[in-house]
Image 1 (cartoon, rainbow, N blue to C red):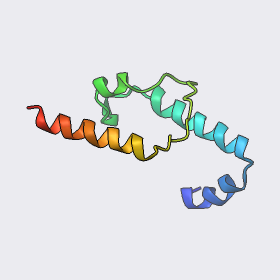
Image 2: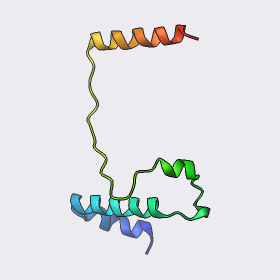
Image 3: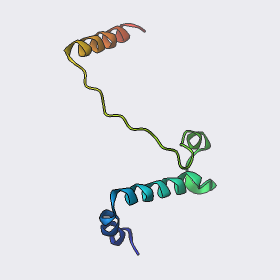
Image 4: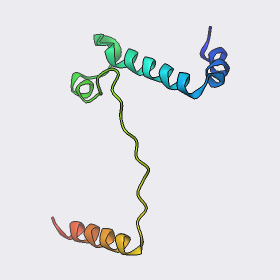
Length: 81
């Protein structure tokens, strides 16, 4: 069965099952330690361990004063060699 045949069935799954499938796929990728996968060991060390839950946060919006402070900080960093 090809991926194009699986996609409609995956999209039809309830969201919870899609998330579970995603976790299974991630676990499979992170557990594969074969030398021929092209992922350097240094990069592999930065991957989260299997079954890790990574929290998600909505981006914070910044008001005009916040943008002014950010722009000032960037300008100061550009001045510093």
